[in-house]
Image (cartoon, rainbow, N blue to C red; front, side, top):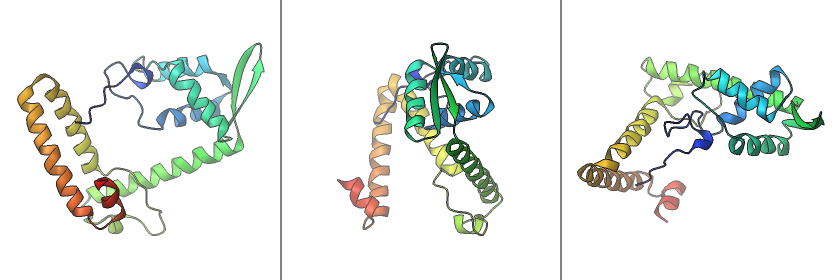
Length: 187
């Protein structure tokens, strides 16, 4: 099984991530768009915005800030002995582009839910393809996580889940057979 137990680094205390992968990056850029801040201020601001359900740690914030610096999205300068971060023009442009992508993705999901069978039909002309999960994909992952939690305490459920996962893997490999992804998955 591929169980991932959450850790306090990016969690809300329940073992689940508060942000999806990469979400902390966008949250930090949003904060810095409002005002320049040092790391501790950002940690407190994120905690306040979540109503206390998300308590970021230095281990999640500072590496992300360093990555944003490396990408040229933020700069840092010492002010009163503290490293204060500021969003750059490139960071603002990146954030704006991601917002546009999210809006386009949301409108595509709505169209799919309204009965469009194919993604191509649901995607408005000229909108680039977003590589995010569909509602069914999200539901599948949610159910898989719930099944993994149930399997932790029940050996019969653990065996049933292993059987289901084995069958799913075989089916997915069969579907992707002959494709680059199928060859990579089989290795």
